[in-house]
Every structure is written in C-alpha cells, then in structure tokens.
Image (cartoon, rainbow, N blue to C red; front, side, top):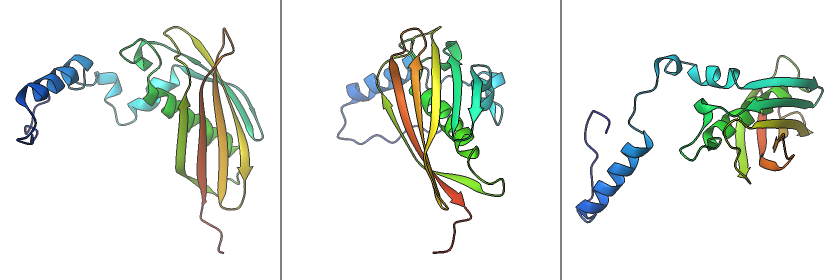
Amino acid sequence: MATGAPAKVSPDVPRERVEVMCRFFENTGVSDPIPPPYAAPDGYSDLLRVSLKADQVRRGKVSCHLSVGPPLLNTYGGLHGGAVAAVAERVAIGCARTVMREDKELFLGELSISYLSAAPENSELVIDASVVRTGRNVTVVEVNFKLKKSEKLAFTARATFFNMPLAKL
C-alpha cells in the first residue's frame, strides 16, 4: 500500500473485509508509483499524443483515430474508461474550437459518457465529433467512438461547454 498516514477504518467494519479491500487495491496497482515519463506535470497529454491522431478537421466536425495500446488499458485488457473520458474531452474541445471565436475561452460544464462495448488491445477506434448546438454562452459537442474493424459503436460522449466570458443577460 501507499506510504503515509494509514486510513481511518470504522470499528464496525470487520477486519477481514478491510484486508480483502486492501488486497484488491494492491492487486490492481493503485499504490504502484507512476512511471517517470508519465509522472510529468502534463504526462497525461503525452499518453494521448502517441495514440490519438487527427484525420479531418472541418467547421463543427472533427474525425480522429485512436490506437488502443498498453498505456491505455485497464486490468481486463480493454481501453480504460478514464482514457475514453480524456480522449472525449480533448476531441470535444478541438471540435468546439472550430466554431468559436478565438477570443472566447471554454469551460467544460458537463461530460457524459456511455460505455457500450469494450475496445480490446491493439484495436483501432474511429472517433467522430460534431457540434450539436452552439450559441453565445453554450456549445454542445457529441463524440462517437466506433471500432474500425466492425464499425460497432463502443462509446458515446456528450460535452457541454460554457463559452467565457458569458454574454450579459
């Protein structure tokens, strides 16, 4: 387990349940140190940069592909849900930027994701993002992840951005 102060455990939780939970966390690697290349302040971007490539950028639409490799896998050998969220956020920001003025900043207000199917190791995903709605204050982007080989929809996301500064009402 991680070093530092031990967790406070409620006295009504049986000791054997606490031990099972601790073993679970140890087995999943939660306490393992982050490898040096990814412990950098923006190492998360480096992880995505090697796997995510833009194919086409048009006004209100972005198309990319993602290679599912070992750095992005969960313990079951599929694309980690956190990686899906990170990619969805990045692609949605890029798509929203295609319809916004350069002086406007974005604030992510909501990101919802439906995990419909696994994306196994060494698979390729085609990611299509499109602006659903844009206005003075809000931009909504939909992002779909399809397995390239079967064209099966694996994940779908919807991001709502607030355009800053907000227009006066």
